[in-house]
Image (cartoon, rainbow, N blue to C red):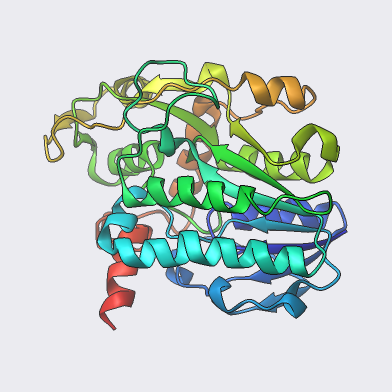
Length: 331
């Protein structure tokens, strides 16, 4: 198949491009490569590459494609708050524009990368796709609005699907250390301590970055009638954890590490434990493969390999999207 993949040079996209090429698909990658300095491993190249803003995409860019996989975004809560107007322009207007031209170009399937962060301050635990949404950031609000507006474009010939991903963790050629598991582990390895900005009580659903990429592949192949214009939480019921449980898992491996509660953020309002039963019912053959423990082992090996991850890299923001975006916007 012919795939139009946005964000192919991103944290998830690097894995997804590899999986698509392993299956033999023709991939058109679209990415501004804003985070080039986060590269820490070998990247595959797409069959065709567009270095352009999704807001400037044209129908001819997508001609002949069977599916759009849309990952590109202002991609987490702190980044969204840095410039809420830009977040709306990219995450809402850009995403809707891409969906509109995909429909115009005759692309039958549109897989949208959404987020479980839209549940925000959950009214209860064990939230499914019908639960009330309580976004706590411009980023989360942008994902909700994009879902709503793209959903209205659904037709017999155009099937959007909304993948609400759990919080990602794990190694990637385009590394991120601003994700909770990755951040806590990198802090131990480079500074010898575990630093928590909150009290560790909030719940987070977690999923390995490779499993997110595998989910997109599964929804590429899923029958249209099963997934047409549907929202689906992407993750596993047994990988909901409080932040303090993540700390415990890392602490068991590094018992000498000091645990420091910095209190910078106070009580974190984002607290959501999520159900993934719809995913299991729709695609019972899809199973999350990577546990937190395996992900930690993988990152320890990667971060310790030559050249090892350094404290200067960790603190300097090379692998933190917010730091990179701040520098880009100041240019």
